Amino acid sequence: MKIKTLLLLILLPVLSISQTLKKVEKTLSGNSQEVFYVLSSNDTIKKGKYTLYENFRPKISGYYLDNKKNGKWIYYHKNETKRAEGRYKSGKRIGVWKFYNDKDQLIQTYDFEKQLLTNEGPLKNEEFTCKADSKYAGLIFLDRRAGFKGGNAKLHEFIH
Image 1: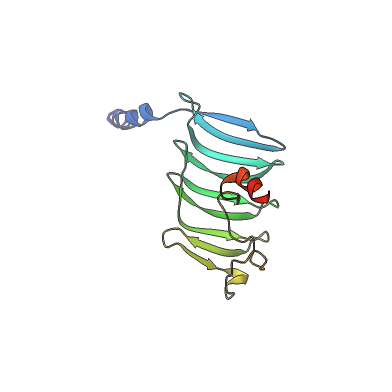
Image 2: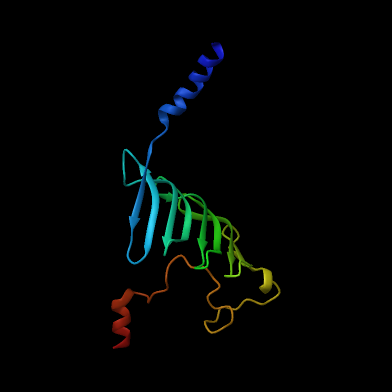
């Protein structure tokens, strides 16, 4: 009886602070779907596992904590092999991220603390160049698409 009472006293604070989550399945444009969890008390705050599917295949998976990416995240190629994997803390990339080709071979790593890009696997002994027409074009994983400085309005102005 004493053990049960002691266990209850230990677990009671943990159970009282825990927040219940609600699963959300959201269809996006085309054949994309997000599956994630939000707080039952506030459905604008993502918390827990997140997966983005494209054509019923995983494209991105990871975890949220209070609306910020947190923990391990994996990005996938169309053939469902890993494209990139690494960790987030409070929405920022940390540690060493690994990048793979579509044959599941490690090709690059990037250390976010040291800001050091390293070639791996079949490219380990190759010199890295960043020319757009080189054989290395497209190997770097970007957070967002490239765009014209100043946006589309400035691009149209430049063209005219």
